[in-house]
Image 1 (cartoon, rainbow, N blue to C red):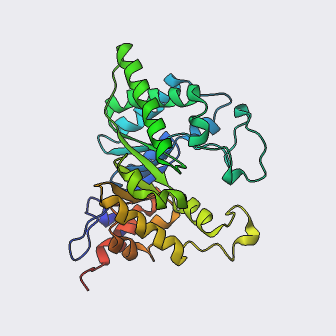
Image 2 (cartoon, rainbow, N blue to C red):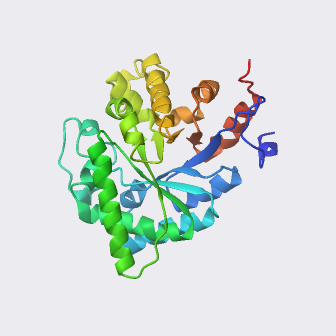
Length: 292
């Protein structure tokens, strides 16, 4: 029955439409994305390229991977999150210090903005890959406008270098992850700097509720449906739309069909889920009537 939903729009009975994209971790996942008829890739977790390597992947190695994904998707949007290493994702060759609170520590954009050689290799690869498809770049773990400005400056530096080297580059849409309460509170200012937000509900829940989601003893207290988390999401959507910034969800809540209607009423523009959930979410969307 779900297979019959392929090629059909993600539109409610009263005409409200939303994009449904897929989350992936490597090139091979694109087969499932296409098989389940996702509208694009809402989250490519690029850190898995690093986690599956014994040393820092080169610019050319990364370029080959990003280019392949862009080409396979045939012009559909491909949102690639820049390196989100640290916390529960560790690679020995990074030589990251042991931390008492790694989820609150040296990770993601904090590493990239202090180690430009690592960051620039990835950004150069992404800009080159953008010449072969519809690539968007998303920065994780943002807590300030300054971080976004600094990341964009490094990106522009990479673009100028590649042009000077006579290498082909493409245009990219720039976005950020909203996964900290700080980013929610600054959503209006951040929306002026980027073209889209993607809400990482897993970390947003963790940081909003002050609960370590890696600690099984806290499972009874970990509630992604918590009113505070849902208000954070709604606040983000309202703030972003004031500045023509579109908003999606790429965390686990995106596939939670108990909340699909809530998200549509909030005005979310996109839900990105694991490939196997695309048609289930589409079915739920097409059953709703928001006019009631």
